[in-house]
Length: 196
Ligand code: GAR
Image 1 (cartoon, rainbow, N blue to C red):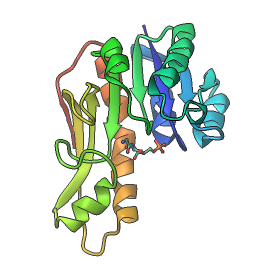
Image 2 (spheres, rainbow, N blue to C red; image 1 turned 90 degrees about the vertical axis):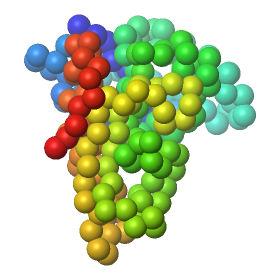
Image 3 (cartoon, rainbow, N blue to C red; image 1 turned 180 degrees about the vertical axis):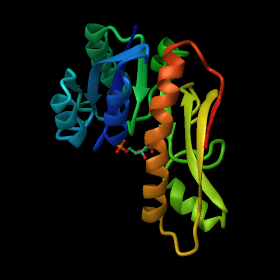
Image 4 (cartoon, rainbow, N blue to C red; image 1 turned 90 degrees about the horizontal axis):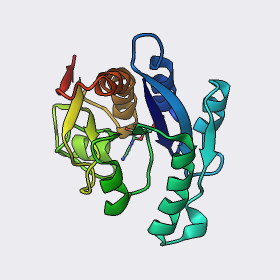
């Protein structure tokens, strides 16, 4: 059984779906939900689900990313995860940290990578006149929003869509895709999953 630490910065809707999926035949169980933002809504949601939580606020570290990651690593070492799942974790991680976890760290990104790395993905897809958008689960490597793709889900972009309406449609698919990919990944299956 693989132990999974989930890193969040916000409401944690993906985190909830991951935790809920880690039962039964899924060969993974949550060992920690860690946030870098005090008051992140996901912390209370994780506690309500009975998952241990930790907070490592990045702010006191200022630009000292290595210092922040040392504190992060101390919490992770206590929880002993086999896999880290980034779920709306909005800090860029250093190459050193990523290298340590390479092959064991996943991320969900709200675009059809390799399109639209970084922020404001939905506004950029609408602005470009794309016919479809979606989300991608990928292994984390030192390059931002790069790394082997483990799964993608697509949705149409409809006339009149705003970044908000599109984000909501994509988020529904994130909630289906990420749990499915995580359980496959924990079972050692890294073949890309395509939904629907
Ligand atoms: C999700 O849409 C996720 O794809 C995105 O943040 C949101 C978190 O929502 N992640 C990124 O943009 C990472 N660069 P949640 O807290 O409700 O899961």
